[in-house]
Length: 409
Image (cartoon, rainbow, N blue to C red; front, side, top):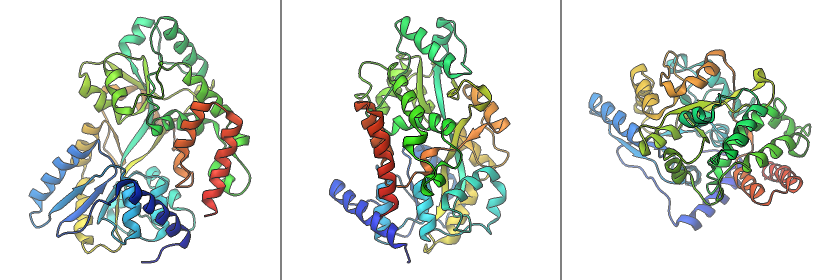
């Protein structure tokens, strides 16, 4: 197996780190087709669909592996030439690096490609880079960064869904004045800070920001001051322990009525409803600017299926993916996960999603900026530190330095 030396160096370093942290790695091969997932929220849905697949294909056994810290585990296994047969992972920088490393099967000649919305194929192909021909994953489920809001509290406050940044801040002010928690933040988990960060950055940064940074034509110091300022503004409307509450506890607290709005992705909705099935929720795209038509919804490939180019079970792997993108099965997935589908003709009809349905219908969508940051940059940790220390100049300089450092490894 050939790998780019730069990639191997990075992954080996991360693998050593993972070994120090965990003392072991997950996974391993047996006679079953291994399906590796980087999400814990969809495990029960996968189990149900896998059971159905195995009933229809009694000669194929599947082992589902969804470990904690999945991407670290995956990178560790890459260094051991032990990649899973099928990888259900996000369309992010890690996927792009795996595709460029040549360890994923090129699926561009597969008929499965014809069942997928072209916009999402384009999104993952851009992650692999212009120099890498081919399509190395089948986009399956898509997601959205949203403002999840308590409709009953909006009604009590007498406010409507905002269309501009100023209207949004005015609602935050009103909620605060009424003694409510305007935004329930869960910044103990650094990744949750990426939800507002991506919403802001996607609508403020220059087009092709990552490409321009690599060409020396853009930087965080030049192009992200407004993003950083607005992150600090949002922080003013949280609760008294913004850095002490994690994602799981935040879901429960918001479900129980703590907070008017919650900055999260669509994937949080099933978790909130588990804690309170009767909560009256709505969603909208964060209005980042004061020009409504410029405010786009951030959406990306939440799950794609990739196949290990060295798997012994390539036909079984493709058969499983074909089963998953069957319209009925794809619909079951998005219904249970409150997600959106990359499969043509499969639509999300949950009334909770009404507020962002128009974004999908009109194509008012943009992708996650951080998916194009260099993998290993640890942007979420840098942003968390910034929200604690609030030193904008130092933070933006650090972001530029880390980008350059990772690119030069």
